Structures are given as structure tokens and as C-alpha cells.
Image 1 (cartoon, rainbow, N blue to C red):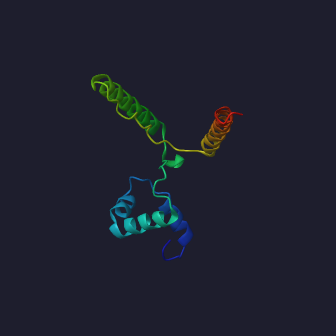
Image 2 (cartoon, rainbow, N blue to C red; image 1 turned 90 degrees about the vertical axis):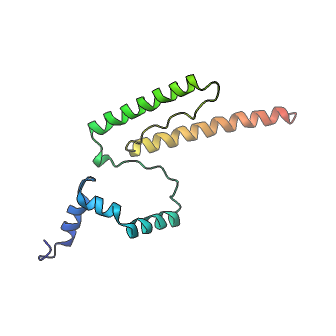
Image 3 (tube, rainbow, N blue to C red; image 1 turned 60 degrees about the vertical axis):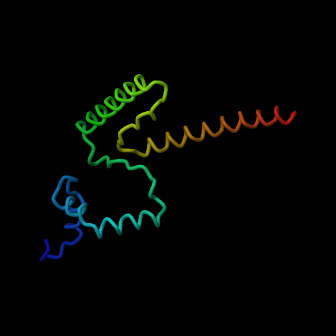
Length: 132
């Protein structure tokens, strides 16, 4: 492929290597590449964005393991909360799962409904406190 200059095909094969390949390890261990990626994310303003694993690398086994991690985190939370004498720990964070377009649209719809309800309640509250 290299000699026949089939660059696009070669890059396509490289891009579809699994995450547990030697190439992925080499890229992850490359300090210059990591520094450039972090700087690019900061410039783009995406430093605090949550990470969702790609659907192409999600399997039934990964889903089962994510469910187990969530259960263990929940049990640890309940155990600490029951034995901490009043101070409650922060609730556990759900293990990251792939996010589809349907998930994003559902989240946007929930957010819009919440904002509409909050605006209705707050506008009524301001009318009664202002004497209206």
C-alpha cells in the first residue's frame, strides 16, 4: 500500500485499529502529541466537556462492566452515607456510555421543558412578591 501510494486506504485502516493496539499505545505515550491535543482543546474551549466512548468501540461486555461499576459506586455511596454520621458524600457519577443523536436530542428537550417550567414558576413568584 505504501509503494502503491494508497494513502487514503492506509489511513482508513489505521483509523479503524482498536483502542488496545500498539499504535494507540504509542500515540497515548507521545508527550508532544498529548501536549498539542490539550492545547487545541483549550483553544477550542472544550476542556470541561464530558467524554463519551465511541459507539463503534462499545460492546455488550463493556455495557455489562459499566453497569457493574455503577452498582459498585452506588453500594459504596450507600455504605459511606450510612456510616458517616450526618455528612453526606457526593452522589456517584454514572459511568460514561456512548451518546447517540437521540440521547442528545432527549437531553435538549428535557432541558427546554425544565427551563420553561422554571420560567413559569419564577415569573409567578416575582408577580406575587412584587405585589402583582
